[in-house]
Structure formats: C-alpha cells, structure tokens
Image (cartoon, rainbow, N blue to C red; front, side, top):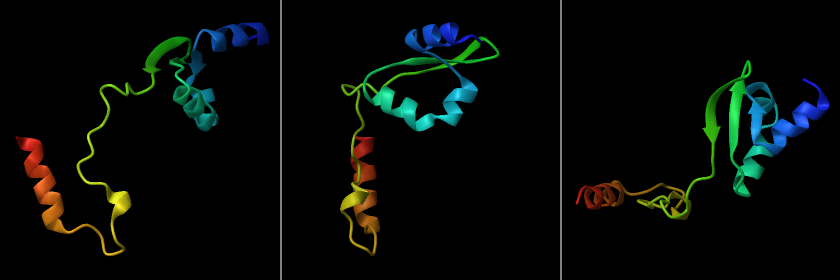
Length: 86
C-alpha cells in the first residue's frame, strides 16, 4: 500500500489487523479520545472498534480496588450478586 493510501485509510478510521496488533497501545489511546476504527484483514472489514458509551456504562458490583490485602469477604460478593438479580 502506498504512503498516500495508508494516510487516507488512517484518516478514514481504517486499520489493518497486523498494524493494530503491532501498535495496540496507540489505538487504545485514540479510542480513549473518542475515535472509532474499522479493522480489515486482506482488504476485508472484520470488526469495528468504538469507545464504550459512558451512558450505558458499567455498574460497579464490588470494587476490588478498595479491598484489604486478604481479599473480599465472600458475604460481600454474595450480597452484591443478590442485588443484581432484583
């Protein structure tokens, strides 16, 4: 692929699978900034990478970053799981 075609593809949000695997951190940073990419293999689109929608967001069940060195009590995990069912 010529350099001008590669530049055009990058501007359009198209990235080759091999390039993505080689420079994953670069593309993660760009996705964090709101960009989306179509990933191609042998000139065929195979999947699309997009930022996670903050509105849909993730629900925190148990915050394991705030636990003590001995882990999370089983009862805390069970209580959190029970609240998810309701």
